Length: 46
Image (tube, rainbow, N blue to C red; front, side, top):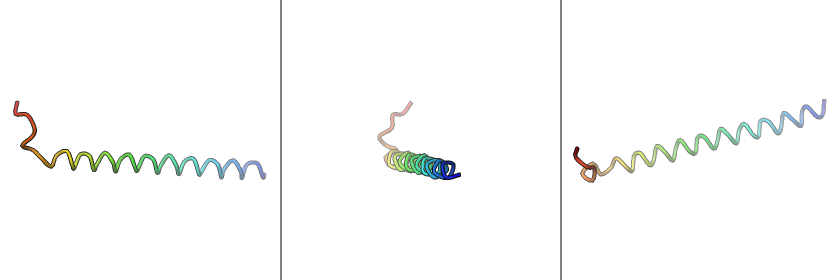
């Protein structure tokens, strides 16, 4: 039973790390999109 509790502890830490990394990447992409769309005059007219 002790080994399974240790495994569960390692597993939830890993899942929390993956979830946190995904949230950070999503926030960075969102901010880059906001910053990139701030100057519409710099975009090429096609």
